[in-house]
Image 1 (cartoon, rainbow, N blue to C red):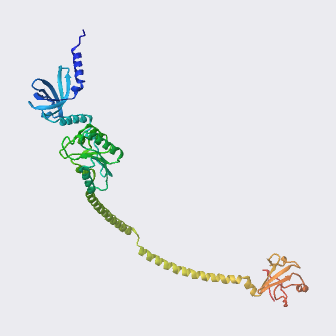
Image 2: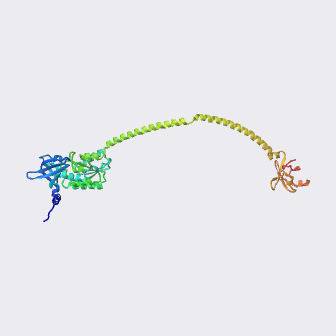
Amino acid sequence: MAVYTVSQVSSHIKESLESDPLLTDLWIVGEVSGLTASSAGHRYFSLKDRESLLRCVMFRNQHGVNLLEEGASVSVHGRITFYTPRGTTDFNVDIAMPEGAGELALELERLKQKLAAEGLFETSRKRQLPKFPKKVGVVTSPTGAVFHDIQNVMARRYPLAELVLSPTIVQGAEAAPKIAAALELLDREGGCDVIIVGRGGGSLEDLWPFNEEVVARAIYACKTPVVSAVGHETDETIADYVADVRAPTPSAAAELVVPDAYVLRRDLDVAASLLFRVLMDQTSRGRSDLLEVRRRMERGLPDTQDLRRRVDDRGQVLASASLRLLRENKVQVEGISHRLRALDPVATLGRGFSIVQLPATGLVVSSVKQVSNGDALEITVTDGAVRAVAGSGPDSASSAKAASPRESQPKPKAKPAQPNGMAPLL
């Protein structure tokens, strides 16, 4: 026969109790008895009926912990646990509600606790709505008033946005999976900037599809920001907790997702007026600065009128000096011209002299040593040239040949050439 330790038996009991599916998800109705509170705020009590008593513990911050009162009849949700240090079986309560709450309300609280523990309601994961959406998606019934109300609000406030409907039923046993499918389709293929999920008001049973886990997880998985607009302002669903933004009504949801065109125009007018004033102020300051710079530049510039008068005076002095210099130069040029004309060979020829040259070389004959008997000579006079041949004696002169037009006329006998190559004509 096997012998076990107390710890072994306690561990077995704990494992058996806490692994039983029936004992891990229980709703129990009973009367609160022996209620005590620890310094940390936890509650310890018992639930009893006419025949039995069950020890319970409920930690602080659990839903409905403040409803526990001595003698109160409550419905509680939780799981059976075994506390090995004391060897006691306890009911660990996580939800407490007044007795008589409906089955749907109890299920709603249970699912809220579950999804909250998984982080589906975390505020840190909720996204901001776009300020100027181009396309707005709606998941609702195509025949209800919800879509019509959203259309009217958007047409009035912001007609620039495109409205896309993903139709679905929103009530009944089959509504929840269809709502989830319509939302997933719109998120995947609609190209929307924001999505509104909603329906009109109704009872808890009517709104129940928006409390089901499949819808909550579809909203959580949506990549597009989601606005929940289910029922009236006092209605609350799990979809409201999971969505990025909760709207009290579908019409309010439309007002949340799009801006008011009137407000935009007003803000634009205000901004334009402010910008105009700023530009005018800047222009005025710039003009003043420019005028000041211009005045400074003008003060720094020289007196151009005075300089102009000085230039005119200098110009007149220069003109007078130039005229005087020009006259002096003219006198000098005329004197030089007279002297040059006195030296001009043509002028010399006019006084009765001639120029004797050797035609072969063009050399001017200035010495008898340059000429031999029989050399051809060219004698230039004032009105032409005479061809001659050098020789001695009276006969030699008769053989001279004149090259000028006057060679038929008798020529006077040439005198011997002068040292400068010129000979006076007879």
